[in-house]
Image (cartoon, rainbow, N blue to C red; front, top):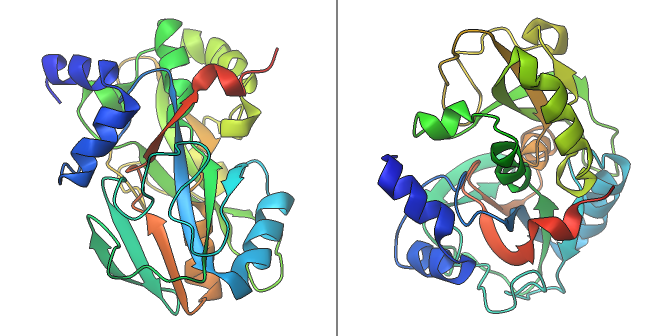
Length: 266
């Protein structure tokens, strides 16, 4: 993303961003609408909703729930004017644990029995990292954040089970402690990192081959830092194979009207 485009994206309002996505803009949302909370989304049939809720309750680090809708609802209290079927830049449709489609909207796929979970996203704390002078390599390079499936098992819940997914950001070595402190004040959007340094220690063999998102080029003195990621439920879909689900595409989030500061604790 060019610097001017990035400046426009950072300063855009959530409402304008959602309108653009509804009209067909399909880009990763890292760096967009600075100061406003972004969320992951997973919608499942109501007979699977308790399993998802329990999975999130048992695994709050990767799956911090910020809202849960009533069955069939297409709105969320986090952004009352948003339509959950159209206002994300890209969606995924799943059947029997297989990714069936990526699409700009899910109007034709929506069902009246779907319960939607909105889960905290690490993009929310990125604006705070920038304020502390911490460069974000994926934003600088115009890429989606790198995400990896680890060998860290999540605690199973009902029919749902699977590994933790993490997002990785290269952080300058002398700024890692600051990054840990800043993000540690935001547990509702994954909080402090789950791992720093050697990726093989959490089952990641090659940082240049992310499972989701893009490979990012490190700079001198950069250290890989890993945060729990809200794509974790999608890894659970692969393992657990529910008959149907709709999710966001990794990195393509719902931008809400909630302020980042709503989820800071001190």
